[in-house]
Length: 326
Image (cartoon, rainbow, N blue to C red; front, side, top):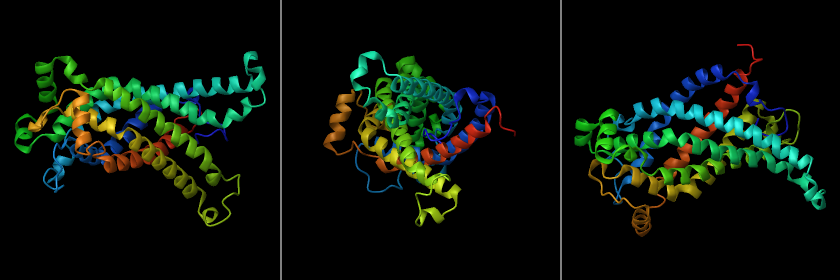
């Protein structure tokens, strides 16, 4: 659980080797399963003109898995950085925020009665800060991964057959734009990932805290239909509901930025028109109502990814405890 009801698994309690080895296998499998949703989102966002047929681009299974190799190989170190930053900073923020609320500084003496009412906000606040920091720290690997994989995803078939390898693409980018080309859209990516990460984790942690009472065996709140469902299923429903609420909030609020970022990073791959200025891209997309292109695949990806990954991650944290017997 992420809430403050029970003792959480602390970062210091976890066997990191076990966490990363089991986590790598689990994360890679999930990446492979959900990669087609990423391809669908990127291609929707990269289309300069509205397409009447969704079958023109994605006409074969192989196309749904373009760029998978580079995503799997780079996503693992990015995920290790993400999880380490997320867990460590969440624990530090949570502990310090609770300490300040329970032992307010003398300067805040006049608010002594009101300060304890902030305790329920600590979980979403710590989740939000940690989620934002984790998203930013992993961007150093995520941005080059996105730039290379997205260009492969949107290539025309004829071009892909000739140039469709990650190493060729990376070499081509470095030759034409220098190393900076691999970090195209870095600022915008940071600007998107920080609010998306913060909104996702704050909403997820907050919803889970509110809904957790329904998936808690110690409490008999859900006395109706919900209470007749097995406990594991109740906890699963809470997990999925929290993750999808977080996905909708994070996707809707950051989609325009994500679409502009994708268009910048894709550039003119596959013969598409390239606008190098974020403002020019934003104006063009706004005039064609294209800022929310790819929203549904992104909500689906974020919701499924979030519910499966957060659920699996809770289990992973449990089996990675130093005192857990394998």
